[in-house]
Structure formats: C-alpha cells, structure tokens
Figure 1 (tube, rainbow, N blue to C red):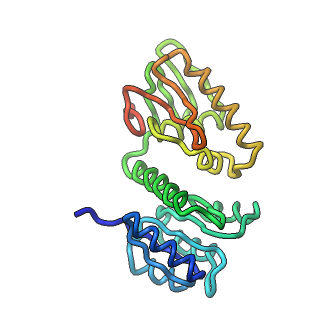
Figure 2 (cartoon, helix red, strand yellow):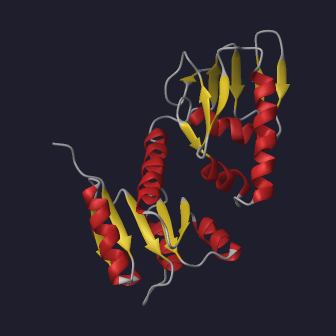
Figure 3 (cartoon, rainbow, N blue to C red):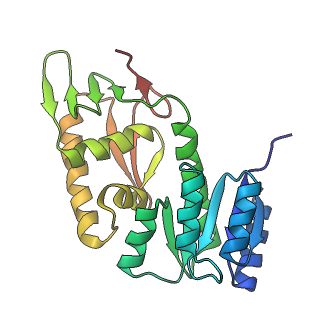
Length: 240
C-alpha cells in the first residue's frame, strides 16, 4: 500500500483550514491542521512532513518566523505560503526565507494541488545526483560553465539564458510552469519580467534550431515544455 504524502498545514482561519485539509485529504494526501505557528512548529519537530503550507498572519508565531524556524531544522522541505498579503515586499520576504511558492488568498483549491504536485515533482527530481551537464540531441549543455556546444562549435550563454535552459532541462518533456520560472529566475512574476522571459525563450529556440529533434513549445496558460525525444525526465547526464 502506497504511503500518503504528509502535509503540515498551518492556518488560523478555522473554516478555510478545515476546507483545505478536507480537500487535500480527498486528493490522497495526509494533511494535519494547526491553528497557530507554535503548534505547527512543535508538530514539525515531532513528525516527518513532505511539504509545509503556512499562513503568514497567525497568532503566537507568524508564518515568516515559522518558516525561518523550519528552515533552521530542515533546509530542503518545501514550503508554500498561503496568505492575503500580496505586497511585493511580503512576497520577496517569503522567498528570501526560502519559500518554494507564494499563493495569495483567495485561491483555487485545484490550483493549490497543482502547485503542490509541481513542487513535489521537482523535489523528487533533485533527490538523485545533481546533473550539471545535459545532452540535448546534437548539443551538450554545461550548466556550470554556461556553455552550449556541439562537436564543432561552442556558444557562451548569458546567466539568464543558462538559468532558464537549466530549468527547462530539469523538466525536460514536462511542463515548466511559467510563474515558477519567473519567481525562480526573476523573483517577481510581473508583466515586464514575463515579457523578458519570452525574449529569452526566443533566444534559446534560435540557439537550438540546428537540431530539429529539440523543441521548446508553448503550453497555453501554463508555461513551456522542452521536447527531447531521446531523453526522459531531467535529460541524460553526461559524466566527465
């Protein structure tokens, strides 16, 4: 029997907390609800959780402090903030602490589950050995040197190009969510950064166009997908 993934849910709004917990449990998760930050922290110290969903405005210990305390104990457990505080300063503070995502209220339960699933897929992909060199058809991409090369030529990438291509490779043949890419690389998913990312996607397509088996496609309303026919998941690791 498959073990249910365990979620730490900290939310002081009783109605929202109960609704969220019940929805998550209907989706197959084991969600444990706590109404304040201190209770949530005590539970975290005693249990093993796969992901934490934290409200920001909570009694006794707010979500930011709780996240910082959790990060001091476990640097890897995913954290999503659920909050009505949508100010840019609050969002940046959340990511500085180490949040994996920041969802403002009111939010769709379906969207919450999709974001949880996306984060857990990324975490699962990181558990193996880190891939620093990817084989992309006729190309080889060295993420540390920020170089894309073939047998007869090489091209240096800018930092943004390299970061974006790294994310695409890590999610090869899967959807790279647009908002996740923006928040990971540009910190803020505003209109201007979104337009900037579109420009970098176009640049990467041009750099990869010599190999017709490699393609970056738009997934309407979601993000992008790097198609690599001869690879699965995060691509083929090259050992050196």
